[in-house]
Length: 496
Image 1 (spheres, rainbow, N blue to C red):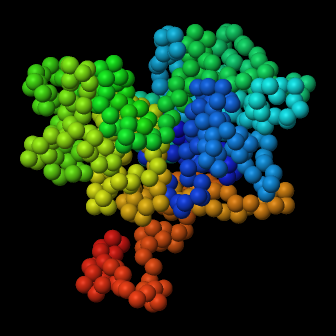
Image 2: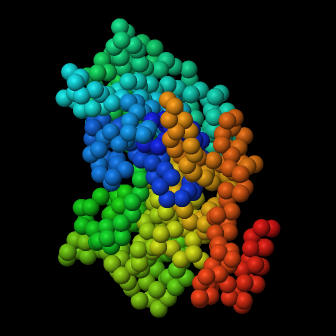
Image 3: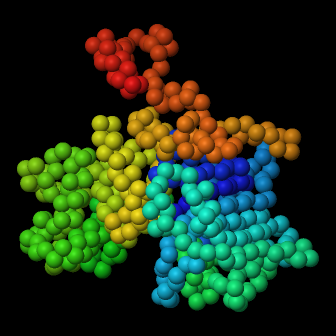
């Protein structure tokens, strides 16, 4: 779980410092930098998983390409910054396995990871490694005593005690500069562990990305946590496809393997409940949960299930309406499929980590948007209960420019993104600023940007006045006399 992120020098993220809760909604106009924040999270996740250059190429550039490495750095006029830095405070899983299946247990579960990436000069003797180099990398513990002061969102002590553990230990990764040369040092867990010292100039990837259970179990689990930070890009075409029997049983970030994942969850649920299902399996408890959730979006829903075709060895997702007419996934709307995929994520106890989702309102009728927002908040961990099988450690961040979304999310989950002017080296530039609302938990943080109430007016009252449209020859819907009274009453009710 990502609880705090500081970024500077990455695209238009300069001196950004954000505290996160289980669910966060970021609202802002197009092209202010909402997606850049997601890119920064994705870049951190990618650096924990692959070489620096591969991680950088996975991030979209301003021009939409994935190979313009320099464009990832903050630009000031025609010049680019030479460094970008990231600092992430996170809660990591207490146990996990490495790439060889070896079990790891964390010494500490609340950590701060920081990394600084520099742009290497073209005439550098190490330029064959690519233009990126590590200037700093650190992984240090945050104590249980500090946790209560750093986890600022509302939560129960029982929840905090279920995820925060550990004791005072030396750093797991540290940086040393000697004779102008930078060294990244990997410390084994415990006081007597072996120390591995590597010259930063020779490193094609972060030290965290090569952690294993034998030498650095805590660093390994930090790596696993960061690898779980995902950008959901649900593609209806991927969700409409049936799955082979051999398909993965975890939902892909594009929504692929929806049928196989749901079938696997239903089968496991039946084993746990020790219940016999009908030949079609349509009375399965898991299928009933999904159908009930989908009925929040579409009233005329009776059943959801997965057909198992033994002859073709395929799983096919099906939905039955009130007339008991079955419809395959390929016949469902884009919005319905997106909702279904999120509903499956919500009931999967093994789906943990941070999920970023852009514009959750896409494909959803405005009247049904509250159902989508409830689902997204239900996916996130409940900080009122200890973490466990029924309350997995999951986190959700969404971005939007929809007034309907902004008006209906809890006020303490909202951040407003806007461009602000700043000056550096005598030059003016614009950077993205993330502001919270007054009288929320973030507003108590010293130095935090608090959005004036007037900034919300464009979301809560997005209709321009009639005076601006006097030249129009046709009447707008909002200007009809028979609707004006209704909308005025609605506006009055919403302000109560």
